[in-house]
Length: 212
Image (cartoon, rainbow, N blue to C red):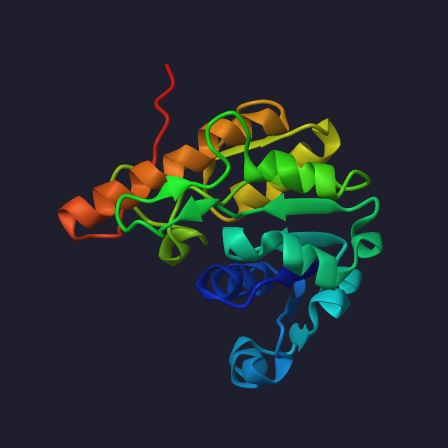
């Protein structure tokens, strides 16, 4: 599978390594692709770099791994036509740190960045996932109490099925919470993750849904 990743921060790089590890081809997009030359060399021959537009065009699946505040501009730079008919994995969180800790949500609680992305990309199939765990544990995480849960939501059943397969390949239990409006719940979960980390001086934690 060919995967285009928009965003070259820690999340984008972690997921790029994960996709290559599991046999996929990756193009990671950046405003300045040249800065990724060493990273691509490290990851190997199944990785390449390009502009946001080149990465979006490359991918059968496109991953948004941008800062929440930059997401709309990155989509515009990538070209909305390059998302048409594709699955878009939305890993973003609309965090606002302008007033310090704890962060707030710049979308409020009656909207979500996931829903906005689906509106910006009406001809793509947006699935929210990978936004409730730190980048260090996004690929085949190992915890004493077993695999953590990856929560996801989206409107298209076939897109969620495909993303669910990726989630499980990456070593998570899967929890589908319904349509993209569920991002109104998943995005605030990230604040809970951040607050626990800050209070306990650790970032080695993840959510687990217990089922009977």
